[in-house]
Image (cartoon, rainbow, N blue to C red):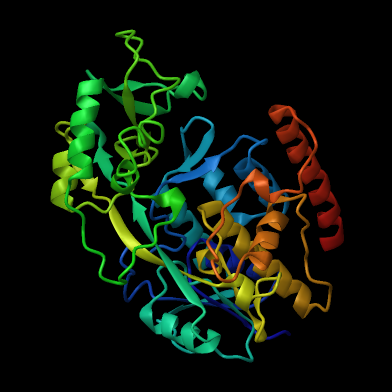
Length: 434
């Protein structure tokens, strides 16, 4: 029997990797600090905990995120199946009850006889053991130091932020109204409309509110897709009104008044007693969040079940230290998965864990490594990671720009063809895998 495989980190990538390997009959050691300690952004003892938002992005089969989901489901992805089992209404997006999702994943891991759990803050990597390092963007100081020593300091970071969660019973339903943008997806979002006067008052308080000082580094690096609302607002008066607060496609049918700006709330759980402020990642102090966000009409008496937080996210310089199969160039026994590798997003992290696990199986069984071309989102992501500028490497999430281009001018037809081409490519890949 082959050596036991070590997986360090029980987040989305590590959990997917463990389940794939264990279901293939391999013995897996899963190491995670949960049970003894938590990172600054984690709150419960379950694996695959979702931190920033409960959205897994679009289900549209012609969108980048939708295409990636199709590819993963075709490969038998375990965590994505669980996500669909735990989904909450969210229009065209896949949003999940995050507590239920993590609990189900944890149950799958703990009940699998091929997985042995270790509650441990790992600070040593056995160079002879097949290992997946999936410690995530909040890798502990011990592991950070181990990786820095191993990789010669080729370690980067950015700051990430999470949105507040509000008690549904504290929302003023005389003002808020249910509607998805352009009525697509039913009434899955709760909207808090603003007129111009209300918006400008909120905007001016937001850009002048007190933020928590970031002490980890002298310079703040903020990843664009997780930008704090106050940082985005600082770019100009209309920056957030053309961003997360855009009013297009929304109107309260009770008043027939088109709002100047809209704050959208999304269901956080199946019971719908908690709502997440969409796009409101923030680094404001808790006191300022309560003061400023209560200026939003319908949230004047909001009870915050969780305030927004900001934290440091770590990732490696992938194109400099890893090959196209996500193995370290200095040691092909060691794979890097999840956000630590430079993928950004929940589904992308799950994908990277599955990708590493598939390659480990092929490596151990003396078969060719699994390779996806950029007719697929998976292949597009790894082509980017492998060939990005090593002097200014930044994380990447799924987008259609990663795919091999098609000379079709009509956007809808082009995106439909991207999806069709991905399906065809995946069918060929699955034949080779099987």
